[in-house]
Image (cartoon, rainbow, N blue to C red; front, top):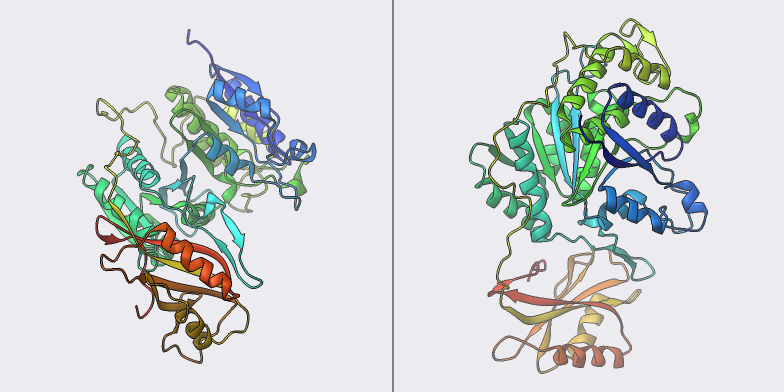
Length: 485
């Protein structure tokens, strides 16, 4: 007899308790050897005064059991409440978000009947680092953080996932024709790790044309790996064009802990009506069973679900006259899946998680430690808040207070050069980037040189709001060049 494993469950808000009840009923009927330890997360916790949406003592439960099956939650509007999903992902290091997107033609309507792909999304950094500031009266900023370790971990995970699940190709979506340093790093890491997996066809796409191709001909993709924001957007689009976001489950994988859930929200407008589709939550649970090594149970449940879909037993969100045969509620759908445990679909492709792909002696999802590059400070970008000033006047004022170590070479407004020789048609806000470069014999400066410059700028009555150091790493610029520089 298999020893039972304990997993954490959180029923969530809105339709969460209903779809969790249906999911657990199916798992119990399939005699999955699991025990459950429940925690409270979401709206009740938020409204009790904890802006994170999770009580402090719940973290101990999560870290002890290492696996969480979570229902969707409702985040109250206003009040500075943080996204619970983002909090859990980043606190527990759940760096990989995995979303299979499969069409179930002809039983669920879709324009893409042979779609079967997986999106692997980086889960911790990019713009989701959440570092934002209002810098002037007119301008706000959000910092886009892409790290080499974070990129290596997610890209290597995507290739390893493809190997373990008998996939044929891994594609990378980035925008490094514009963001040459941040997305450029992600793309470079992809190309490096692609060489470690010679059995796969690796390819790269600029995200806009890649998104267009995904929406038009998704069958040309298999596994797609992306930075956080693109992955968030594209995984929802991909799920929807399969036929319904309500069918999507997802996994959030870390080195020690993992979380499984539906991809949809809490839908409070239909809560308590027994009409919600539990499929996303159930398929998230199937991914959890595979993760736990319960491949036989995962196979049995998933095939029973496929047979239910194939038999036309559908909840209202996917029910179509002439296509569906029986409209059921949340618990009725669960009962239909339970009735079909042990059965196989005859039209839809059955799954078999018992098939094992030979693995290397050690699975490597981590990153390679590299020697630190030699860093030279060669300049500084000083950002100013100044409303209504003519850029030529600003250039004259800053040129007049140059130091012996630093001279002004460029002023931009929203990234566009406005000094020297800017165009009068360029629209300017109150947010100015003023680039100073080293004028020393060795072309390097010190922190004291920067402080001296800032003191002069302040004494001139100019409001500096931030600085960014310009550094060379092993002699190569670690910053983007300004237009016309």
